[in-house]
Amino acid sequence: MEKHRKLLKLEKRIKECRRCRLWRIRVNAVPGEGPSNAKIMFLGQNPGRNEDAQGKPFVGMSGKFFEKLLSQIGLERSEVFITGVVKCHTPKNRPPVKDEVEACKPFFLEQIEIIKPRLIVVLGNVALKALFPNEKVSISKSHGKLMRKGQVTCFPTFHPAAGMRFPSIRRKMEEDFKKLEKLVSSARALNT
Ligand code: SF4
Image (tube, rainbow, N blue to C red; front, side, top):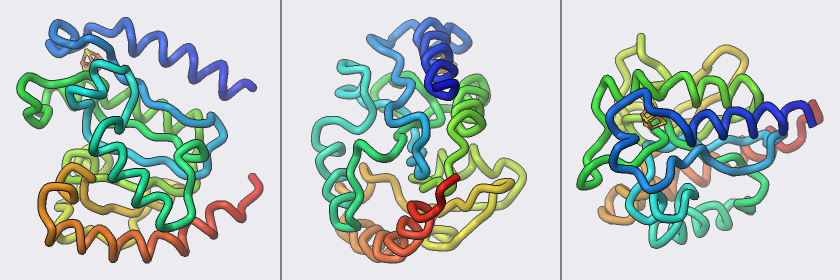
């Protein structure tokens, strides 16, 4: 309950945030969604146009693709926490730039701190670099390999938007998700 209350307070701060230029063009900030005691977190990039309109992560086509990937490994959307490193939409869907990531980063770090997931699935380069700023990482080299962030196991893979667009990336993502299935079972089995 304590976690839930903390997440709600954080959500309010995100929705009111004006720390970077992106607040001016958003319809909705997208804090993320999922249970406060989720054992698995998915960390993506930032909201697209549909997400901005609805205030929810991964809706529309990318949401359907994402949910299909989840269902292939027996995961329900309702049991995972889904968020992004940047909480507001960018002009013309461009990737967020460095100062926007830096301004927004404390929010997802706080979400990790509150939820304490056992496993973070890192979706794409922007999220990977934001989570591991002091390491030379790229999603093309790191995908499918386990990494550690403090006590948390991290599993990088591609962003669903890239998987939807490029068949070669989709195939790699599907391979990664097969490996992920085992990690998900272990994370679920933990009671704390
Ligand atoms: S992107 Fe993040 S830091 Fe920038 S205004 Fe939105 S919530 Fe605030």
